[in-house]
Image 1 (cartoon, rainbow, N blue to C red):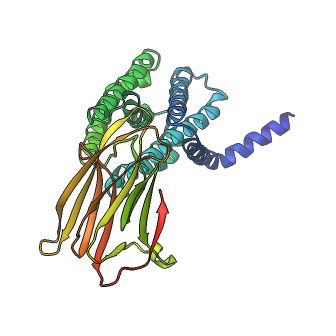
Image 2 (image 1 turned 90 degrees about the vertical axis):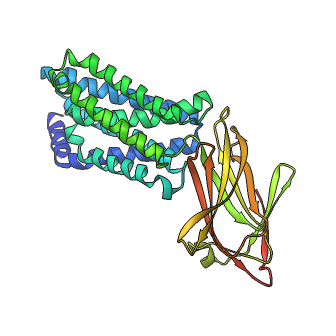
Image 3 (image 1 turned 30 degrees about the vertical axis):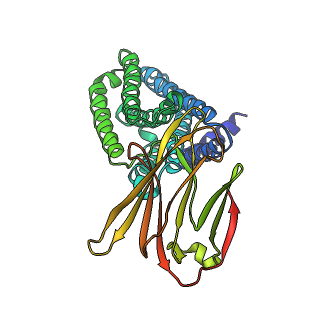
Length: 356
């Protein structure tokens, strides 16, 4: 028995560098399954549980390791810490990637991906307070930025900054509770606060620059059509029949005689959340090589419908050229974009009807 245990320990030490990344991947897979199959409330409880695991693991590292009594926990704790940090960061990636156009939110998504990679690379540095406390702050900040709008039923930008302040207060409370028992934490406590302050300013700048989407809203469906007509509880839309290769093309072209062109969207929102959605039409000006505003249409949405709250806007007689319809909140936050080209033709192409 003793020999088997020794072999297991030796095998673990030899392959330890693979186990921790595996826990990161496992956390990501668990998040995908969880957030696709359960309600937002349940997903938020899962994130809360992961925050609790991270706080417990950090506490064990600094309260037990400081006294030299980590023992067997020295190898077990990093697994739980790695798994939960990975789950928190991947949860943020899933939430925020579905809540905005990639062309607008790519800086935040890139930051989260880099943190996930760093989470794997810095697995052996989790005994450093300057590593895990800032990571915890970002994870809690992004999670609260989803939870607060959901519970208060508002996507006002102020709730994002409140989330950042509450996350900082939460992390500082953990530091305050640990600093008297952990000289290592006490030594760098103000450095951690300084880093969190910089992170707060950076996240606020990204938010004001529309690089952070207005979660928990997300675009369930959007498309460009020749007509949109409500029939009972469904919308009947007509679009051009496309070949397989046309569907794969990045260039979306709508062929019209005299118009109109419709943009239809379905926005998913939690049960009690209400918001105003704006379809902001732009037209590309070839003379100035820039987008020119071509009008806005605003309509309210109400949360609770699984397939999203549906709405549409249209241009009665669009000119030939390149168009972009930006789906925004009333505060100017970007949820999605539809970019397409309008071509004038003498004969209308074949269209197919779908029910949405």
